[in-house]
Length: 423
Image 1 (tube, one colour):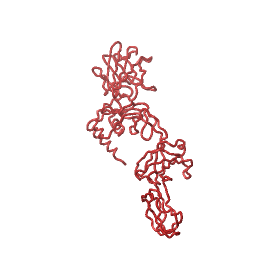
Image 2: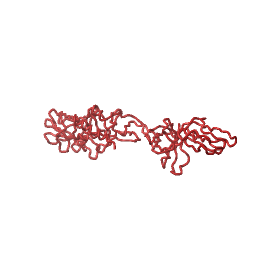
Image 3: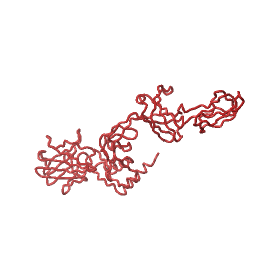
Image 4: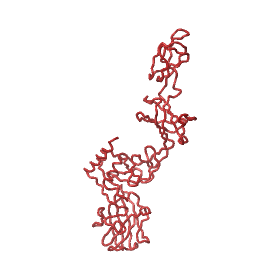
C-alpha cells in the first residue's frame, strides 16, 4: 500500500493547523440566517432567524426576512417584510439581492410580490450557494441596505503550503473525449519477416555458428554441411537480418535436403493481435488509433489498427484485430501478452478536466476552483468520459483554474474547516 497520500494529507493538516485556515464558514442552510450589525452589516456568526427560518435583517424598526426557497422548486430568494416585528404586506416594499461570487462574478435577483404575502425572485440561485451578499430594500419609502458573507465549500490555503503538498491547478479547456475499448493481445513476428535457414543438400552438419537470441545479418554464414553428393563442405547463410528464434540442429547430426536448421526473424516490427469479444467487434474498424501497453514495465506506444481478420480464433471464439508496432527498444518480445486501448470514436467537448480533478461533496460531483489562495467546491454536470478525462456540461467556465492533483486534500481541508454544512 502506498503511504504517500496519507503522509501528504497529514503534512497538509499540520501546516494548515500551524498557519490557520482562514475559511469563514457560515451556514445558510438554504434558509439565510444572520444578524444585523451597526451600519447594516450582517455577520455570519450568531445569525438571528425569522419565523420562516430565514435570515433576519433589521434596521430602524424595519426588517426583511430573507431565505432561499427550494422545497420542491429550484432555489430562489424569498423574503417577508416587517415593521416593529409585525408582518407587512408584500406590496409595502421591494427587495433586491446582489451576489458576488468567488472571482468577482456578480449576479442580481429582484423579488416581486406574491399572493401569499411574500416576495419571490423569478431567477434561480445556482450552486454553490457561496457568495458575498448585498440586500437592498425599500419598505414604506425607507431605503435599507445590508451586506454579509454566505460562504460554503470554501477554504484558504497559502500558496507555499499548497505547493509543498503537491496541490496543482490547470485551466478548464476544450478537449476531445474518446470512445475507447480495452482489450488484451499477443505479440507475434510479422510473417514476411520470418525466414527458415535451410540445408540445400543432405549431409553431416560440421559446424553451427549461431545460437538462439543471436543477432545475425543477411548473408552471414550460420552452418557448414558436408554434402553427401560432392563430399565437399558448403556454408548455409542467413537469408535475412534478424534474431535467431529457433535452432533445430546440432553438430554431428545429419541434415536432410530442405531441413530447417534455424528460424530467423526480423523483430524490428511486430504484429499485435488483439482479441475482440462480443459486441465490441461491431465497433472495431481498420484505421482507428490503438495504444499498446507492455505489461512488464507499463511502457506504451501509439499505433493504428491495420485490419480486422475475417475469421474467428477457434479457441477463444474472438475476432482478431491486428496492428503493427515498431520494436525500437527491442524489449517487445514475440509471444508476450499486452494490453491495448482502441479508440473507435472521438467527440469534441467544450470543456474537459482530468478525472483526478473529480471529487464528491455532499451529494454533488464537484471540482475545486482556485482564485488566489481561495479554493471552492463547484458542483458540475458531467458528460462523457474516457480513460483520462471527463466532459463538463455545466458548472465551469473556460479558463477556470481547477485543482487537478491532490484534490482530495482540498476536500479534506474544507470538511475540517466546517465549510461543508448540510442543506
